[in-house]
Length: 142
Image (cartoon, rainbow, N blue to C red):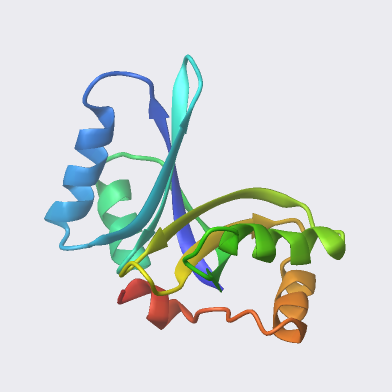
C-alpha cells in the first residue's frame, strides 16, 4: 500500500497554490492528486515522491496534514477499464470510499488510487483476479 497525504484547506483563493509551493520548495514531486470541496473547505489528497519529506515541510509551515494508507492498482487504459476493476470489487461486496486515477503514458495501464473499507480483503480480491497492485516505490517514482 502507498501513503497518501491529506490536507484540509480553507476554501479561499491562493490556498492550494500555497500548499503546492511548500511541497515544491521541499523538493518533493506530486505524483497524483485530488481536490474535493464544500462551500467552506476543501480536502487535498495527494501522493508525493517522498511522503515523510512532504509531511515535514507542511508541518513546519503550520499546515495540518495526515498520512493514510491507500491501494494503488492498475486498470486498463481503455473504455471500460475502470468499470471492470470496480465491478470486481462490487461483485465481492467491497465499498469504495473514494478514488482518483492517473496514467503515465496513454495506452498503458492507468493507476487507480483507492480508499476502501477493508484493505486486506481488497488486496486478496485483486490478487485472485489478476489485478496488479503497485508497490510504493512503483508509484512514488512514476
